[in-house]
Amino acid sequence: MTEAGPATRRRQALRVGFGVVVGGAALWATVAAGTGLGAVLDALGRAEPSWVLLAVVAEVFSYAFAASRLRRLAGPDATLGVASGLGVTLVAHGLLLLAPAAPAEGIAFEVRTLRARGLDRRRAGLTVGFEQWFSTRSFYLAHAVNLVVIVATRDFPADARWPVLAATIVLGLLVLTASAAARPRVAERVGVAIGALRFWVPRPPAAERRAAGARFHADAMRVVGSPRRRAGLVAWSVGAVLADAAAFWMLLHATGIHDGFDLALLAVGAGAAAASIPLLPGGIGAVEAAMPALLAWYGAPVAAALAATLLYRAVGTLLPAVAGGASFAVLSAARRGHRPAGP
Image (tube, rainbow, N blue to C red; front, side):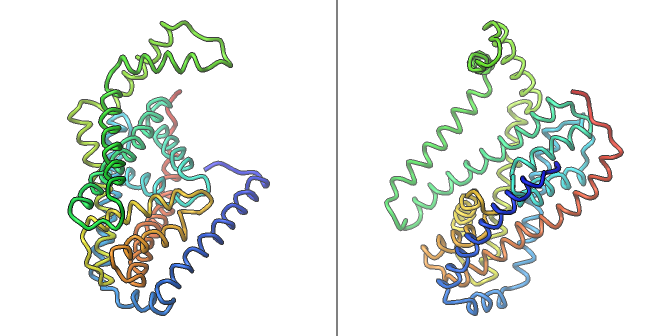
C-alpha cells in the first residue's frame, strides 16, 4: 500500500465518513422496516450455530477456489504456494476490498507480490488482469443463468421479459467476447486501433502496432493456456461464486428462512451490485438494505432476512478482512526476503 499525503488522507476520510453516514441511514431504514432493532437482535440470537459454522466453511472454500485460480494463472515461474496464494487472495479480496480505493489497491498489491515472487512486470500484470477477467465473467455467467432459472421456475414479481432479455444479452456477450479474445487477428486489430488513438505520442506504423497486438495475444495465451485449461479456470471461478452464495444460503437456514439456493444466489448478486455504489466502504448499509429487500419481495420476514445478511457480512466480509490483515503482515515479512523480478 502506498503512502498518501495529508490532503489525500483528508479527502479519503471525508468520503468514508459521508459513505458511513449514508450507509448507516440505509441500514437504519432496513432495521425499522424489520419491525425494529429488537426483532433483528432476536433473529440473530436464534440463529443456529451449526449452520453458521457451515457457512464459514463454505466461505473458506470460496477463497480457496479464488486462490487456486490465481496460482494457476501465475504458473510455475511464481513461487506462490498454497498458503501464500490463499494469503494474497485474502489480502486483495478481503482486507483491501474495504480500502477507499478498492479494488485498485488490491490489484496493485497482487502485482507487487507476484513481482516479488518471480514474475516480471508484464507477466504479473497479465496474471492479475486475467484473474479479474475470469472472476467478473464467471460472476455474470452464474447470475445470468440463475436469473433465467428463477424466471422459468418461480412467480416473478415483475414483468419477466426484461430480466430474461438482460440475461440473454449478458450470456451472448460472454460467448462473443470469449471467442474474440481467442483470435490473434482480433488482438492485432485492437493493437492497431489503440495505437491510432494515442494522439499524444508519435504514431507507429500500422505494421508495428499490429505486431504489438500479436505479441500481447501470444503473452496472454501463455497465461491462460489451452482451451481445457481455460475451462478449468472458469470452473474455479464459478466455484468461488457458488461457494460464496452457498454461505449465504446456509445463513438463511440459520435464521429460519428456507428459500432455495437460487434466491440466495440472486440476493448475493443484488448485494454485489449495491456494494459497487461509490463512497460506501464495502457497500456498508446499501448491501444490508438490498439483500433483505429482495428476499422480502419473495415473502421472507425482513428481520430474519436482515439477520442473515448481517451474519453473511460477518462471515464473508469481516472474517476475510481480519484474516487478510494477518496475511498481510506475514506476506510483507516474506516479501522482504524476495527480490522483485526485472521489468
